[in-house]
Each structure stands twice: as C-alpha cells, then as structure tokens.
Image 1 (cartoon, rainbow over the protein chains, first blue to last red):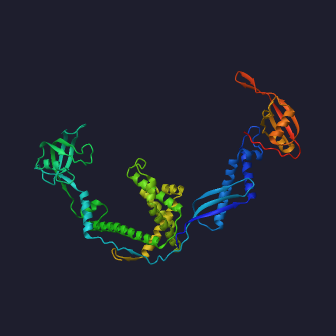
Image 2 (cartoon, rainbow over the protein chains, first blue to last red):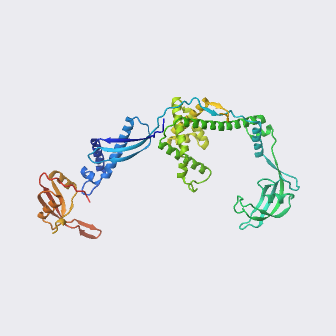
Image 3 (cartoon, each protein chain N blue to C red):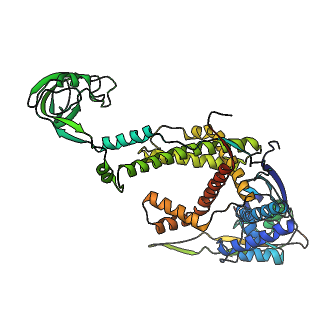
Length: 423
Length: 95
C-alpha cells in the first residue's frame, strides 16, 4: 500500500428549504433579543432583522448546518474522522442552497502485516559478581564515617579540616570559613591546596597563594590568585563500614550480607532487564513501522509533537528551569522532531490494531493499579489522583497507553530473540 | 427648493413597517418646507415608483429636560406616501 494521503475533501450541499427553515429559526431567536429604536422589544419584523443583522444570521445558520451535515456525510461515507475539519468555500446566499467544502483527515486504513514472526536482539541479562561488589562499595562509601587521627603531619589521602580566610587577591567580601574539609591529593582539591597542606600538623597556621583555573565553577574565584590564611584544625580519615551482616541489617530489611547481595543482584537485574527490553521493544516498533506503509493524519502528528514538546518543557521545569526564560525556538524544536512524531503515531496506530486483532484489553484492575502507581509517584492520595484524572478525562488516555504497553509486551514475548550482535 | 433635499430619511418603526406591508405606504421624514406635490415628485424621482397620494403631518418637537435646562427637539414633518397599486415598495435599510 502506498502513501496515499489521509486527506479527503467533501463537497456538501444543503437544500435551500432546509437553509430557509434554519434561517427562520435563527431570525426568530434573534428577534427575542434584539432591541431597535422604533420597535418594542421582540416586535421587530423578521425582514428587518435579516436586513440589519446579516452576519449574525449567517453565523447562526452555518453553526447549525455545517457540523450537522458534515457529520451526516462522514457517517454516510463511513469515514473515521480525526482532527478538526477545515471548512472553506462557503456559499451562503438567501434563497439558495448552502454549499461548502470540508477538508478533513481520516484515520488511515491499512492491512496488518504478519507481526508474529519478529526477531529482536535480546538476551536475558546476566549480573556479574563484580557488578554486585561495585554496588556494595558504593553503599559502603555512602555509609563512610570520618574519624579523627592523632596529630601528625598531613599525608596524601587525609581529610584535612581547616579554618580558612582570604587575605588578599579577592575583591569584595573576603572568604571566611571556620571549617572546611579538603581531601588532600583528591581530584576535587586544587593542587595549590594539596601542596601547601601536605606536611602541616594540626594547630599549624600558614599563609599561601592559591591559583584558581579560568574555568572554575565559582565565577567570583575563576582565574584569580588568592592569598589565604589557613589553620589546620584536625586530620580525619574516612572509615568504611565493614562488609558483614551488621552492615546489611543497618541498611534496611536485610537478614544478612547474603540477603543484601541477593537484593542488589535482583535490582541490577531488573535495571538491566528494563533497559534491554526497552531496546528490544524499540526494535519491534522500528520493524512494525517499516513493515507498514501508510499515511499518517497530520492532526495526529501535530498533536504528538505538541505532547512531546510539553513533556520536554515539564522535564525542564523539573530541573528548575523556566522554559519561558530559556531562549529556545519551540517552533523549530517542534519541526525537528516531526519524523519522530510520525513514527510514534504510526506505532500507536499499528499497536492499536494489533491489540484489536489479539483482543488485548486493559482490565479495571490494571487501570486501578496504574492510578495507584501515579498516586505514589506524585505522593497524593489515590482518591485525589483518580478524581483529578477523571476530571481531566485522562483515564481513557492512560488506558490506551496501558493497552499499547501490553500489546508491545505481547509482541516481545512472541518475538524470536537472538543475542545482541548477531543477525 | 432642491428636490433632493425634500426627503430627509425613511422612518423605520413598527408602524411604518406595518403600513408598508399592508397599505402600500411609505413613511418618511421630510423637510418641513416641502409641500405634498414636492414630496410626490421627490419620491417618484428617487424611488422610481408611482405615487397615489401624499398625506403629511407636522410633528411638534418633544419637550426635553436636562437638569435645570428645558428645551425642545426640533419640529419636523412626517409624510405618508401611498403608492399606486402594484408598485413594488422600495426597501430601505437603516443608516
């Protein structure tokens, strides 16, 4: 099937008698409202109304007849209308039939290709011992405690606790911090600090210059050389908790270290599985879109682009950026993701059709579970969220999304899986 | 008197519409100095119709008060112009 457009043009004519009838009704309703000097309210003759308010009469008649006859025609031709019809070429003259042209878009008709025999690159994810250990190390780091060392000269790897005061080189308010911690020799510590702190003993006071690189994050300091007076107050050492059952219990509901490892393994597995499945499903969508060639209604694409842009804006907002203040040409961004939007719309239409064919439905319970999930995510009571979604008429959309997800899962289950890298 | 100055405006009121539709008669505000003959000529010239009869009435301006000030609206002349049977009545639209 080739890409014949989804656009249709309907030429519709409404017989003069019907136009006249409606016009008379419109005039009658205007009569009740109109006040004209020389006439008592409600007594203005129809002929005067028509002569004085042609625009109002025209609008009233068109508002009633165009949607009615458009709908009738769409039904007669058994079209699946999407989007908002464009009405052009309206001929409306008293005593004549009303003619207009409606440019509409219809949902594309297409035959499903065979979707039972898809191949995707997917492998059950494996979790290595090393990955588990890495995750454990990170947990240990997070639980690390700092312990004071006996007074001795500072060595690389120590955490030096200092009080610091800028004495020269910095215009404006001087820096004065009673307690700062530097990891001597650490990546995030400026070399000037490391060098000068090395060998100091607690209680010692020293003045030295620190040069800040030009790209330093704090603009006030970037590129400057500042003289600090620094007193070393203490040396600390980072102490990682021991990896044992105690540690596991401390972290939460784990019986022992083995239990914790099992949980970590499961988490990593789930993460990997999610990613791998996501990729595989993306492949499925790619294949489906390639297998089915059909035109996509512009209205859907337009809406999808809007939805995507909106999502982008919300993401920005979540990051604390006000989308209105950023200089972004949203129209251009929108156009640039047209291709992606077409793909998404196609995927949705195909999945919808497959769902229909396979009788995949979303149950009440599944919908309910999803609402609960959203409620958890937004930290709102379930009832509140449900009421809001209902009011915003989102439930249908959520159900549609769940159905698409289920269908995709179904296709994924059915697909032949080959390890990544193989053909 | 200039014939184009005779007719000042059509009257569009319930009464005027009724007369037009049932009695084949136009209602006009005319110059106060105009005579019936002049009115007849003016209507025949401007509306391209045959006039059967012209009746006129002098209307006194109404008393109007605005606070302490008392005054009158201008007096004017009204003309009922009956057309000969079969003459199609011109439509006027309010200006």
